[in-house]
Length: 298
Ligand SMILES: [Zn+2]
Image (tube, rainbow, N blue to C red):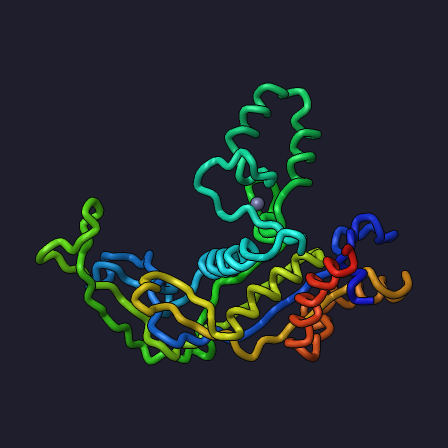
């Protein structure tokens, strides 16, 4: 039954709510090594490369940083899957990829087409949106808003000693890629064992979205995730623990039940969501679904 929520909800939901389902993920992101996310105000720090801090002076992980690292973690894995599994990613292209079907990878070409066909932009853009790869659908692209939102990650219970470490680095000459003699810089690091709260929401998730998030969060739960800068120096290793998943599903049950669920949701918001009891079974279910679909097609 739960699968139904993610199968083309636009076509199967007779109530035509704009909202079909909502998945909320909460967990603790614990640093296993130091963390550096740059972008702090240089003028307020003794370091060349300070870490980002909240207005209260506490380190945090911007939601956009976690979204970026989650997306690239997922893209790396999906790009390596057999194509017949049906999950597709265009990657995060820096150059035009004319052979790629995802419009994100063909932005210049599409811009040109828009100019040439100004009278049919709407139908043209709709056609392109339908070709978006699965990671662009979940994480967003210039063609469609993301279905996933990730809040900034703040310290849990302010569990932080207030200490930042300063690490030394050697400045690298960009042209020769060798160390510039005598040139040193330093950067701030938030110490390992710092724990941040993760809150992530997917709205109107498709089955593919749930497969992608199971793949991605699975990496972080297994301790293979990474965040921030200087990762080649071993910084940014982290593990996601105490993961909880809650769900609102407006596509199952009869009309009265759906209405009640929607009403409860509007009154109580996330407090009304149903907890998924077994998080690893949830991941297993969606990763298995990815492989079973192919087996059924063969
Ligand atoms: Zn794409």
